[in-house]
Amino acid sequence: MPQPGSATVRSRVRIPLTFPDGYRAEAEVFTFHGLADGAEHLALALGTVPDGGTPLVRLHSECLTGDVFGSDRCDCGPQLREAVERISEAGGYLLYLRQEGRGIGLYNKLDAYALQDSGLDTYDANTALGLPEDGRDYTAAAQMLAALGVGGIGVGGIDLLSNNPDKAAQLAELGTVVRHRVPTGVHLSASNVRYLTAKVERTGHSIELSRLVG
Image (cartoon, rainbow, N blue to C red; front, side, top):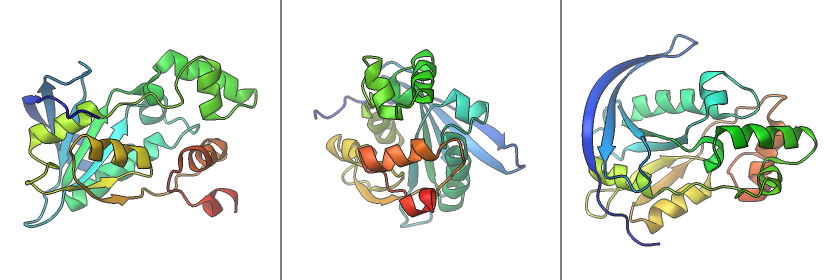
């Protein structure tokens, strides 16, 4: 994979965050010029990395249904909430990437939900629509980290908060040094157990299946 071109910080602004359970955090939100896909991705700086420490980084793909409306069909909302708290404690960045539905868009994601209701898993539903199982490209994420001065060779690596091995593999190919991949918690509901099981069985996500079927 070719190395991404450079991006620059466009603006930064402080935003206080409050979640439905009352948890609060202070974020410094960055926007960027020159991202490869032209999308309006954001980086949220949270907490303070201790001297000699490694920033904890989460690549979180936008999920309107989970992040905003609290849908139980996925684990995105709880993962976002968990990531903000864990990164605030450790110091690092949450990259909020405009990649709805693993890159297929909101309407297509909802069409895929309808196919899942007929028995297909989350990946087969995408391919039944003529779409990729996972269409996400993390070039812009690598550019964002480089613009923030973290993750590159010579400036120290990152710890990646993710269950998804593809995120770490793509970042490494793009020149980001991933020291460790740190799994998120298991956010299980009756509505997402098939979804989470498919992520483990189809794409090797680091989620303990025993927690899902036990």
